[in-house]
Length: 336
Image 1 (cartoon, helix red, strand yellow):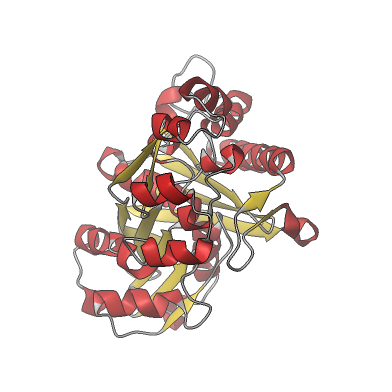
Image 2 (tube, rainbow, N blue to C red):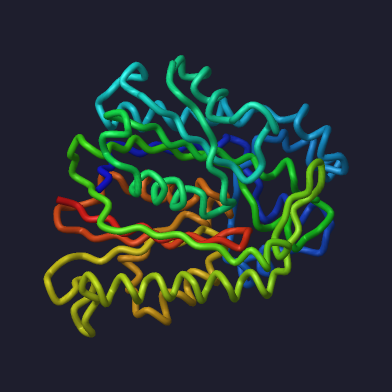
């Protein structure tokens, strides 16, 4: 059993609009992007002038040009700590994850902990965009007495530094952001983890990759189909196990609970297909991909963080996350 005590999120202030991408003269338009992926805006830690002038022609230069390090965007943890009503000194373990770490060594968790002035064991668990689910699945399988009272889980993404802005197929997808969670295996809270799992398909690891000092690239059709199938399977399992929505009952299941869905924020088309196949009504589908793009492993938890005050007693929420590897993870939460 894991309890979620607080969530936090952060997005850089620089906004990449569809008009900005159109002005790069790479074959995009607002209508083209909306029709293809449903994204209107995304945030970046890179200066807009840098993208405009160079289209990020050298990823090594992007790390120097960036306004934030990954550890600095881990400030989402401050909001998570505040919501959990604890201080940094209460944290006994820090686990971090990122699709594009700043350093090979040491762990990003150590850099985040230093930024927050936390003195605790630190290590990373990385599973691309499904990282948050894998991190919590790992923690949920540990003996409660083996964990400190409070664990800080941080997911920070500055993926735009790894994007080729002369390639319209990837330039339209990604944004930067971070999310953080305070969890406990022993101290109860209003939100508990009912179930979790994670898995991988290693034979397909090359379907989505970021080579060292290289650009993100993927087999788009294969990854999109994989994402739709795995998220749909997760939602249907959740519905069967915890009470699926009944026709004509809006967002309520047969037991009166509200059933909420948060998927990997890849693009709106993928999420809409999952909702259509799983009969998820619009008011029970929480997402932020339209205004922030694909923010990797921070996307799912950031959505829940943005809706933190909207969670009500009795709510059930499924987070279905997929990522490179190919990996997938599912988290099933209940509000008490």
